[in-house]
Structure formats: C-alpha cells, structure tokens
Length: 423
Image (cartoon, rainbow, N blue to C red):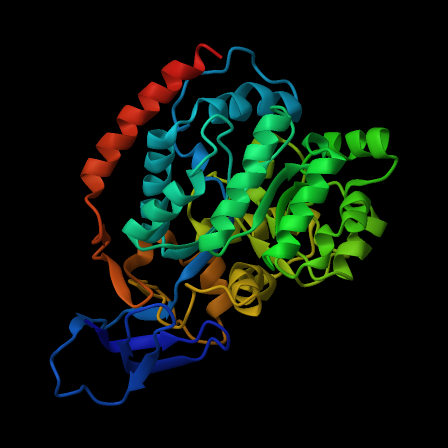
C-alpha cells in the first residue's frame, strides 16, 4: 500500500528548496514519489500527517562494519594495545575470528535497526569473519532486508589468516556477486599479498564491480608498503588497477603524500571519511585537501548515526581539514551520488525521512546548513520510509520485533565474549 505524507514541508536534498505539499510515495525498488497540491479522494493509502514536520531524502552510510555490533561493553583485551596494529591484533582480529553465523545475523539485525531508527536506509558494509566466511554476506543481506534497509556489501579479503582463508574470502565474494549487487572487499595493503590483490581486482573486473579497502588508516600501512614493495599504498593500488573503477571505495586515507592524493584525485575512485573511528584509534586526522570532490562519510562501525558523523567531520575539520557548512552537508549527501552514478539500486526517490525538528529559530533554505550542523540530530527522526515502505513509525521499528532481536543479540554477545577469552 502506498504511503501518503499529508501536510508536509518537503526539503529537496540537493537544492534545499522548501515546499509545502502532500507526498504520494510508491512502494518498491525504484518506486516514485509524487507531489500533490490536493489530497486524493482515494483512501487506499497509509496516511501520515506531517503537519509541522519536515520531509527529506533519507540518509546513507558510506562505510560500516556490522561485525563490531556486539563489541559494546565487552571486557578488556588480554593485552592492552599500545598502537594501531595491536588494536587490530588484540581487539578486532580476536573478535572477528570468534564470529559464527548466529552472531553475524544478530550483528546485522541490530545494525540495520539502529540505521533505520537514525534515518539511514542504505548501508555500505565491509565484513570480516574468517572462521565463518561462507554465506556470511547472504546472512547479512537477508537480515538487512528483514528490517528494510538496502545494502552494498563486501567480504574483507585478507592474507593475515593464511592462503586458505584468503581463498574462501575470494570465493565468498564471487558467489555473492552472482546474486547480489556488491563490492570486492580487501582489508588493507599490509595484509594483502600481490597474488590475492591480483585475484581481487580480476573479480571486480569480471562482475563490473569495484574494490572497498582500508587505505593508510595508520602510518604502519605506509611503512609496511614501502618496506615490502618499495612504493606507497596508493601507488601499489594504482598499479594493480584498484583505482580504475568508479565503484572503488578507499577508506580513511589519512597518511597519504601529495602524489598519492594526486593519483586519487585523477581517478574514478571514492574516499570515505570516518572521523570518530580515527579519533578512537588515535591514528590521525583526515585532510581532504588535494583529494578532489569524491568524498563521502561513514561510521567505520562506531555507530549508525550519519548526522553525528557529519558533525564530527565538521568540528574536527576546523583544525585539520578544509571544510565549511555546505562542504559538510555535501560529504554527507555524496554517498547518494556514489550510489546513483554507479547504478546501484535501493536509494531511489522513495527513500524518505520525516523529521520532527522543533527549531526555536527560523528554518529555511538560506540557513539550512547552520541548522544541519548545530540543530538537526537523530532524535528528530520520527518516521522512515525505505523503498516506499514505512519501516519506522513514531520512532518504532515496524518490520521486525525489536525486543526479540535485542534479546537474541544480547545472548550472542555473551557467547562471543566468552569465546574471545580463549583466543
């Protein structure tokens, strides 16, 4: 049944034009929306009164990690990390080795619910579970689809757990791309040998996809690349063909030199910024200067709140980056540009969010950027429509039983934490 948003104030996500209207929303992938001057006589709609509310395009996340969803509140690692490599070794590589399919499903379900309640209806995710590789991406996809959140997934291929598991990652990727839209995931240069890198690029070529890889998140990545390959990370990836794809996503990109930035700027690839994760890991600060305009925002699994990510990018960028109000909003919305340019489905015009934004000051096109940075928050997300389907109503998930899923995820988290003690 189509949704009718009556008495809405619609904000065009590109022009920021405000328009008072009724909005008919067609269900289904690629469904249309129609602005109506008068209410139709036909009552065959799910009608939502949006008087005093603002309606705009829903949000999207350029880089997520559902596999971190069960980490919140877990105990300290067996060794307290003193650098980024040890954070990976003693926290995330310990966690991902313990994941099984039930834990993956729980992680995906709670992530999808969190995204939906934050107004995020499309997620680009980068997954790792080296001892539960097979069918892991399909498990995530089905969980997201239960909640009603569209996705672009990949498996984090790496040689760090041996050639057999690397091959499983390659096989999982190819099997998944037979049936779903997706990307070819790689961990980072320092855990990928030349043979695996070559195979991954070949899969991307075969399926008209792209690579999704962490790049120079920490200086260790660059140091390792210079030592092992006598070149910098982007130089290595450029020569391997990683930057040849318009679908390629380069995560983090903190420790690049000017030539690397020039190579990215001259390519079709996209960069995704993950400010809060960088702060949490104490790895450095993002600087967009020299990278071009293909920059979008992600969360790196820290949370599922893209409004929060945009604010963080702006605040930290005052000291370390060149970013203003419109620039922060542009990065926030650039993920839609990436999706559209590469003809991925699931982010059409019938993906909308209704905001109960009770501003104490005038709110209009000219001052929208100031409200975006200093006013709008996830608490203002009231209703969410994904592919024309109402998935959040009055701040409550409509598609799944949230209480049951949280109970399931809590049990899985305890099982995970107990398992991690033996690693």
